[in-house]
Image 1 (cartoon, helix red, strand yellow):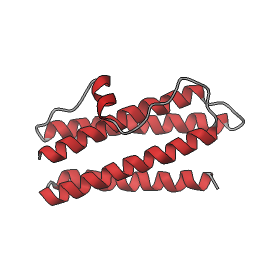
Image 2 (cartoon, one colour):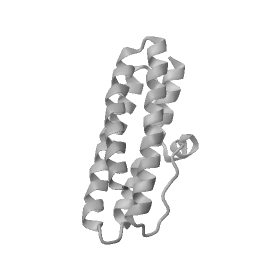
Image 3 (cartoon, one colour):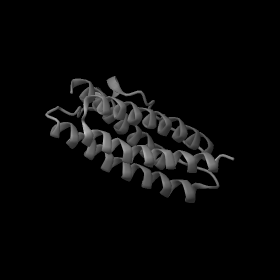
Length: 145
């Protein structure tokens, strides 16, 4: 179970740093497609907020302790923070694709560990997230063509 909990906490860190990154981009997006990207980023970080809560509560249900400080998240995450500067949609889309790909890898890894350890609830949660991130990646990549 410790392996699952460690992986879930790393994932929780990635979600929290990505949440803040999306919010930073939301505040700093500029350019001709502002009216499209600005609300989409809010949609994404609002959804991530629910995922953060779900993962943290799942860690608690497994008798673990979810990481809860910014210091913990920054020491654990594999997602890079956004800089405090104006950004255009090309940079944002490229970063979203990179980071959703990382989250997809996280979920697949956690699912494999959960399946190996017979932790079915965790595995099922990851199925839903795998579907979500796969769909987002497809849409983001279509936008880049």
